[in-house]
Image (spheres, rainbow over the protein chains, first blue to last red):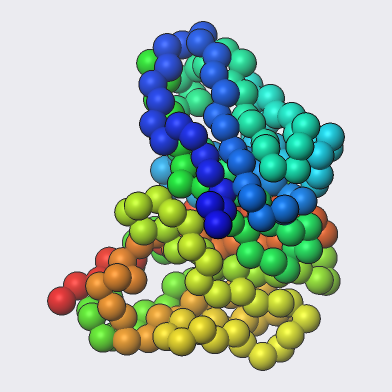
Length: 113
Length: 113
């Protein structure tokens, strides 16, 4: 099984550019989420989805957009990149049961210059 | 905000020795789940151990065990017989009524010879 596939692994953007981080899972998980990881701040929740067609905001949603048209895919869009969005981004998926393990993608290191 | 606190940014342990990583959390819920995740230099997030709040018995996974003190809202991770491969960033995390994970800021563990 591929698990959670996240692309790209590295990206450099110029301020104001837009881009989409891709995330796909093949485990039929209902719950998918995006986190950003910054030094000294742990992982913070950006957006999440409990199923196809349902998304909601996390702790730090500003500047990001998501959609969930299928169970498998949960892309994260940066609308107009800013240097403050320089970070490592993780996609995760799990069954909706909150006791279950979350599976993470390999992360995307994004630099906005 | 309901938070997770890891007060030790860095810890060091000698190979074969025991080390304890601290974690405290804040929640108003009676039913929740606690996790420790390991992040080696590869960036991959790996589940180490999981604790269900309604279970009084401390979880154990091989050399990893927890000391769960529900009244004190404390959830420490003990690593016995430390190995070089245990060197990583360790994150404490909690879920509540949804599958959303709230992470601590992490503890970087060094293992020395």
